[in-house]
Length: 250
Image (cartoon, rainbow, N blue to C red):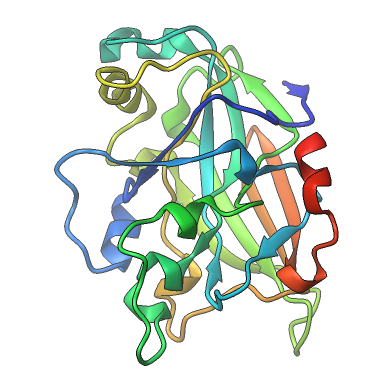
């Protein structure tokens, strides 16, 4: 285990949707027949303590604690049995999502529709907090035995300052494990050192609660994976974001 400020400029961030059975169930869907892939870019990456900026026009910001897999050596057409040999280690990540832009039914107000794809909903600036601790594969020989949790810490109301548990799952619930994902992705997309795979999230996200729970400016978000660590970030509104282009120089 070692401290890392985070990986500020990964070449690729390959994300996996609907990869936990309990998350698929809570959303009322069937299991996908193959991994559902989408991408984020380096503009999304922030570190522990940096603000998550709620963009102008969204009202349904949500959290997703995920195991981040950091590629160590180039992986192209790698079989599952050798896939973990190409992993450098693991980090905790938060796949922040604008559920209304994503088109999640529970997040849509009357007359709203989603974007028809996930790029803006998942790829806006600051939408991938990455934890400060990098843990090598020597300390995590089996990535399918890890507990993941997330909390919302309200900035106002009767629960202000309290940690409210949102997600509590285990990587054993993945539909496709880390090795299977690397095999699938590397058949078509060469994975290179420093690339990150965000491997999906367990149940408990805000969009599928009754009523739905979304992040508001003033809240804090805490994501934790046992054996890896924590990433915690405040939420601010776009109108309070004064960092501008400076964020690119972190």
